[in-house]
Image 1 (tube, helix red, strand yellow):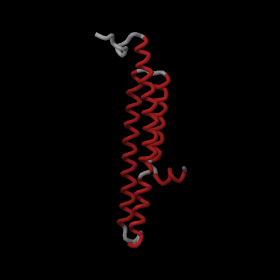
Image 2: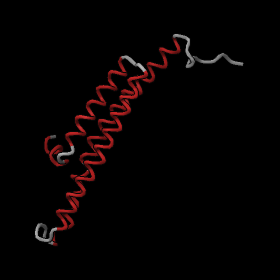
Image 3: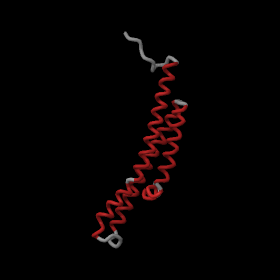
Image 4: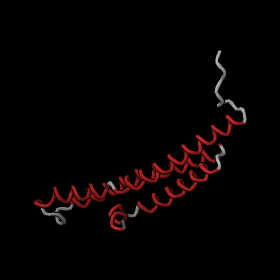
Length: 131
């Protein structure tokens, strides 16, 4: 797991921090759904997504910059080095995607619980009588 994190580069830290905040906020929303919380969950999810895309682009830039230097990679190793670099560049997407998936799942539970609570109170989400 540490190797996976290291391969992703320095951009893995913001993804981890923002993603864990998003997961924590969505867990709080799932436990006690209040509509105002959902905006924060969405904002942290978007922040995690932006951090993930940014870290991926940084990693791709590092790979291409490394490959552009003729003195660093012999031509015989160019393809293998490219593949390894691209593999490592997927790490931010893997971590960010996992954290966003968990946050979305917890948010869905909160939305379901909020809808049920509103229906029990006689809210708009209650089944309408047949006409």
